[in-house]
Amino acid sequence: MKLSDFDFDLPERLIATRPARPRTSARLLLAEGDSLRDLHVFDLVDVFRKGDLLVLNNTKVIPARLNGTRERMTGQGIVTAKIEVTLLEPQADGCWTALAKPMRKLAEGEVVRFSDALSARVEGRDETTLRLRFNLEGEDFDAALAQAGAMPLPPYIAAKRPADAQDNEDYQTVFARHSGAVAAPTASLHFDLPLLEALRDKGVRFAEVTLHVGAGTFLPVKVDDVTTHKMHAEWGEITEGAAAAINAARAAGGRIIPVGTTALRLIESAAAEDGTMRPWQGETDIFIYPGFRFRVTDALMTNFHLPKSTLMMLVSALMGPDRIRAIYAHAVAEGYRFFSYGDASLLIPQ
Image (cartoon, rainbow, N blue to C red; front, side, top):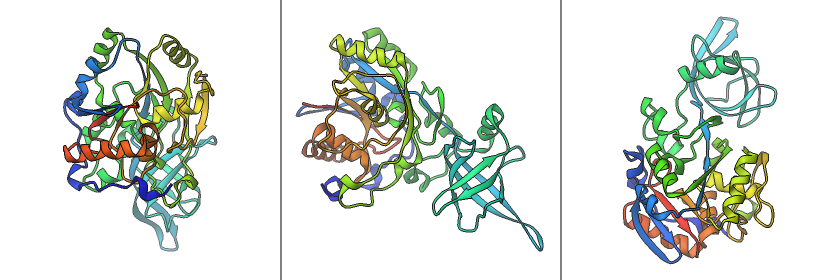
C-alpha cells in the first residue's frame, strides 16, 4: 500500500479559510453505498433515523498559539528576541511539550514571556520540541492563556491569514467541555444548538466522548509504505455512561455514527472484538487504513481531508479506496470546500 494511492489533485481555491455561516448551511455530500447526494448540513434531520446514535467529541480547543519574547542573560545584560510557541500537550510533571519558531537558539533555563501575567521556563528540549514550565497553574493558567493565546489554526489556514477573534468562536464546537485539544474536531463545527435539538426531537441519540486532538494530526506521512507509518498518540476517555449509551443503541438496532475521525478512532480503540463498548481512558495511537475491520462504526460524518494524509487512509478503509476516490472526485468537481473550515460528508458504507 503506497502513499501515492491516497493522493489526488486539489485546487487551492477549494481550501476554506473561513467556515460557512450559519454553521448548518455548510454543504453535505451524502455517500450511501453507490449513491451520491448533494445536500446541506441542515438536511441531517431528514437523513438520520430515529434510534441512530451520534458520537460527539466534547474536547475543547485551547488558545495554544503564543507570541512571546525570550530573555537570555549575557555579558552585556539581558538580550531579548521574539518567538512563537505552539503548545502540544501537558505532561504528568506539570510541564507542556511545545513547538517553537525559531527554536534553534533556545537553551534550557531560558525564560519566554508571553504577557505581564504569563511566562515559561525552558526545562528541556530535543530536536523538534521543547518542555516548558509555566509560572501559573490551574484556573490562573487558563485565564492567562485565554488572554495571551490565539487559536492554533491548521497550517494551511495559518499560512493564508493569522488567527483572529472570530476564530475563538468558529474553531470551537458548541458542545466543547473539556480543555486540552490543540486542534478542533472539525466535523463537529457544523452543528449548532437548534440542529442538535431538532435531531433529539426526531429520536436521534447522542453519546459524548473526549479525545484531545494533538498537533500531530497535521504531521505528514513521510514513508512510502504507509503500513509502516507511526501515529501520534492522543489522550481520550469514554465514560461508563457513554459506553452504555452506545451499547444500548446497538442492541436496539440503531446505527453508531461518530462525528469526526477523532471520535471514530477513539471508539474503535475501546471496542471489544464483538463491538461491545467499554469504559476507557488512556492514550491511543490507532492507525486505520484499508484492511481495518470496523467493530462498532456504521457510518461517519467528516470533512474533506488532505491528500496523502492518514485521514484519507481512514475514510478509504471505511468506504473502500476506489469508492473514496470517486467521492472526492465528485466533491472537487462540484466545488465543495475542503479541510477544517470546509464542507462535510456523511459516509455510509454498502
